[in-house]
Structure formats: structure tokens, C-alpha cells
Image 1 (tube, rainbow, N blue to C red):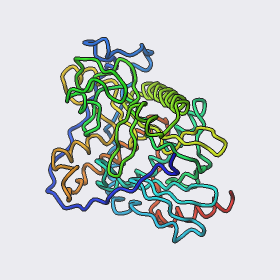
Image 2 (cartoon, rainbow, N blue to C red):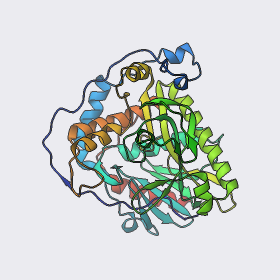
Image 3 (cartoon, one colour):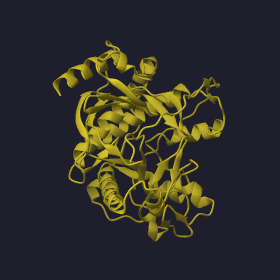
Image 4 (tube, one colour):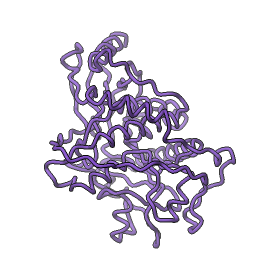
Length: 391
């Protein structure tokens, strides 16, 4: 096992591309049922109360958040230097989104506003770090009946202090649908003819965005540049985990995903896929770490429009960063181009809104936008110093 799950990724040089109109309005269909044209696309019945819920992704609240995002674009937390502002704190690693510091017996995880995809940084999204941190904390609390986690406290909107542990060098990706646009997405490999993937047998005749007959686990391990899909046998042969460790973690991952799907559906959303990371405490306890069911680690679709859009072969309404991935794939080669276009302001602010919308929808609480009177880095430094002194 390794001692850290986050790894650095190259910063992305950017250039300006001319702006165009990028977003069409959300529709508001009302049917939450899954496609009827395939038995593998059905889900268990849900209550009429859940079926009748329609999500409002537009309106005055959206306009307010988009305007706040525009005003906050240049007040994002893109970089941290807490080793220079907090006594005793040492930088351990800079991840794609999180910066990890060591403070005595604890890790200090700072969630920035950096937006990554294709293993590189694309932009900074206002409020993103706070949304991810607070979303994960909500899920950590709600899933303690499934697995313990490493959280100690959260002294700041962007910060979680966690116990140190030995991290399994495997990401546990759980999928409920055949979808995706990246090279390692399930739809990409399925469309190329793969019918066995990460130890899973996939049925013939599936189409993009179709629900799988059952949720599947598709683990990945880390390489220098990107995640590498592996089967359980690969994990054992590489010595990444023992069979007992894998059995326990895989069961936890599938249980977490099933619970996440249930909660999402109760709130009008489909949890499509996600990834989990786990580590071992000093006493051997396996714990959930990193993040849980955030819009960065997960794909969400609007449930009540899924059937109509699936049957007409349109992309689902997504409440995650997939639309940003698709925009970059349409305007450049994000895997090979050394310089990528700027993410347009319209997309940046829309993504900020979708992150907040997802948080508010899942947690049924109002997101509190941060004050701009105190610089984010100063606020974080002050709060971490106080928290560490009390531990």
C-alpha cells in the first residue's frame, strides 16, 4: 500500500478562444420511469412521492448563483501555500483538486476550486472547493452505517482534517450505466467491442446511456499520467491488495453506491457512476477516505427526463462536469494538445451553479456562499491554525 492517494498533475497552459452561445435551457419533463425497451434498463419501483418530484434547474436562484459566480471568478482558491502561513504544516502533495498537508498525526486536506479532466487542469470554478468539501462531509456522516471514515473535523468550508492511514493504490469505480466520453469510460471501451472489462462480463446489444443489469465494479490503479483499469486478478498479482482486503472493500463500495443511488433517486437524480478510495488505519480498520458522491467523483443525471431522452437517443440532462468534458473534446484534443482553449465564462458559471444545485438537492439545505471580505487563503490559514492547536 502507498501512503497517499493523491498525485500531482500538470498545470494546463491556456489560450483564449472566441465565445459563442453554449448552453440550451433545461427541459422539465415529468416521467421518472426508466426505459421500457430493455429489461436491463429497469429499476425497482419507487414511491409516487418520489416519482412526482420535478427538479428546477433554472429560475431566479440559478440566475443569482450565476451572477455571484461571475463576480467571484477572480477570487477562486486555485493554489495554496499553507506551509508558509500555518506553523508546523508541511506540504505532502498537490493533487488535481486537493492539496494535502501534514500536521502532526493528522492530514489537512484542502479542496481548491481547480477543475480537472483528462488528467490536467482546465479552469477554476467559483465555490467548487467548498461544495466538494461540504458534499463529502454530508455523505461521510450519512454512510457511517456502511463504513467508518477518516474524518476528524472540518475547521473551514474548504478543509477536512483526517486521520493518517495507509491508502490502497486502487480507485474503486462503481458503474450503473454504460456511458462516458473519456478513453477509459465504459461506453468507449464497450463501443470498441470489449465485452469483458475489469473482470465483468458485459451483455451484447447495449447502447450508450443504458442502465446495466446490475451495478459493476471497475477498479483502476494509478500510473504516472492516467488511471489504468484493472481486474481483481490484476490487483492480486500486482500485490496491491490481499484477497480479503479486496473482498471487504469491494463490498463496501457496492453498498455505498446502492445507498447513494437510493438517496439520489429520492431527490430526483440518478447516480450513474462514482469512485471511492479506501485506506487502513494503524489498527487495521479499513476506512473510506478522500471524497464521496461529489460532482467531481460522480456522474448524476436528472431522473424524470431520463426515459424520454434515452428513447430519443439524446444525452441525459447531467448535473456534473460532463458537459465541460464534452465541450473540450469538441474544441480540441484534450489528451494531446499542449495548449487548450480557455473554458468560456458561461460554462464556468454554469458549472458553479450545477455544483451548488447538486449540493442543495441532495442535502436539502441551502448553500452558503462565502464572504469575499476576507481572502480565502487567509481565512483557511486562520481556521486551520486554531483547529490544530486544539487537537
